[in-house]
Amino acid sequence: MGGALEQLESVVRDRLAAGDANASYVASLAAKGRGKIAQKLGEEAVETVIAALTEDDAALAGEAADLIFHLTVLLAERGLGWADIAAELGRRHGTSGHAEKAARPQ
Image (cartoon, rainbow, N blue to C red):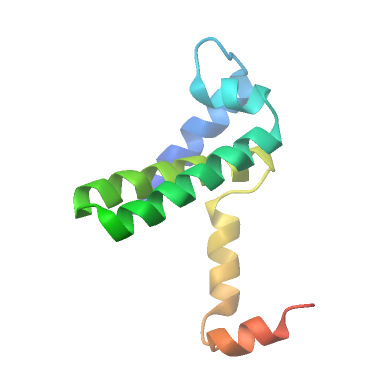
């Protein structure tokens, strides 16, 4: 999975850098601004939940892929990547989910 995410991140970063909204969905989405990217991510999250509750595994996998794609775009637009997410997950490893949530600032 890591290789697929690295490849996706690389393509997304290249398309953001090129900025050709006519040739790239990533660039056209980014040209609409961070709010639009976040909105699209939210839509994909809802579609993933619906697929989880009402559709088959193939549909869920497809929606999950769309969700991860749009999350990758948002992260890259913010200058973050999957290495940053992996580091945060590593930091949390070995900590109870309840304890980690309780330690967050209110």
